[in-house]
Amino acid sequence: MAMNRDRLLRWFPFLAWPRPDRALLVNEASAGITVALMVIPQGVAYAALAGMPLITGIYAALFPALIAVLFSSSARLSVGPTALTSLLVGASLAPLAVPGSREWVALAVWLTLLSGLMQLLLGVVRFGWLLRLVNSPVLMGFTQGAAVLITLSQLPALLGFTGRSYAQLLDGPPPDYLAIAFGLGGMAMLWIGKRMAPRFPTTMALVAVSAALSFAVGYALKGGAVIGALPSGLPSFYWPGGLGATELGTLLLPAFLITLVSFLETASSAKVDNARAGKLWNENQDLIGQGLGKIASGLSGSFPTSSSFSRSAITLYAGAKTQWSTLFSVVVVAASLLWAMPLLFHVPQAVLASVVVTATLGLMKPRSFVALWRISRIEAAIALGTFALTIATAPSIYWGVLGGLLAALAHYMYRHLHPRIVEVGLHADGSLRDRHLWNLPPLAPSLYALRMDAELDFASASTLEHAITAALAERPGLTDVCLFAHPINRV
Image (cartoon, rainbow, N blue to C red; front, side, top):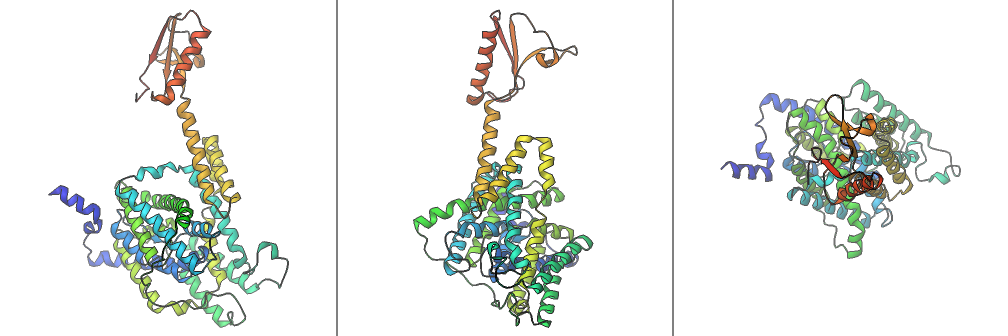
């Protein structure tokens, strides 16, 4: 009976949600509304980053968030659009279609469905451990490289040069000084809000204030770049049509990279959430939830979703304790789609750029490279190489992750193929230590006593054989070999 219940909860984890009382609902409603007021403007901004219709960014915060929370094990993750996944969508599709076109939207939806299916499959077969292949140095380098690219992509809108490339900045009319004021003012407001009142929905307050100011000065009538009209109503079912074999082959690699990167984003939030709740993280169940959330996003006509670390942190700071906070957030997003879309018409695009830039500036941590260099120069070199490759290969930035992943695997294999092997001698305290390091005599004149600090398998066996052969060749008087195998944990 207990086994059947465990199996049922694995497929339907929402059945284990706590029954809410009045006090819990009030607390969860407060947290959910706070997150919703943050995700709505972020969704619009990240949709622009992904090259998608702006309304799809809000769609990504509706059904995907609902489905993900129903089938995930982590209670307080904020699922929806994020900067990294949005950038990956834009970078992956740039060579294939025109941003915002029907073809672009269809390919983005296929990318979403493919990455969702990959995550769902990995979770069902319990292969969550595969995602550990992307280690911290690779993720650090890629994240910071992507943050630089995101910031650079937003500078034209932020500084009033919308529609012009960097090569065209010196030509044409002067910049839009109102856009500069909106953009830099928005960044200042977000920065102050983050430090003075982290629980306050500063992003939504910025959107409301900027929309009012834009309307008051007639910014749209003067030709200023604003969000414009967004369709009201809930998203309808969307099917992207057929996908040819060539297009499928082109999308598989980006879909896999989105699967990796988006779930690593989820992991950074889920580990904190589960640690605070005193639970072990069920990565496979979260893979299932995140995969189903992506599928729901695709069928809503939107782009890949992930767990946002910043919004998940706001959820925790706002006092959320259960999944019910996400349900309140979804209700607010749905109500906004039904009745509040006209209010976003006059929001300047420079304000959206300020939202994106402020979010990505938090990802830039140059000191982390210095700290890693002090710990491991090789891993720091991998992180820096991933960072440089991510920027150098733009817009095909997924090569940065692949290059870093290959470098990390090569480093791992090198260490495995070259384990530490030392000749031991008897120390004064009775322990066996590296005799060359401690200037100890051999255990016996004709004995070669050695220790290998690694498992013994096909990869390390040849190195062990080489060490013994070299010692016998250098010291003809050796007649015996003794291998102290206590550090060998597997044969």
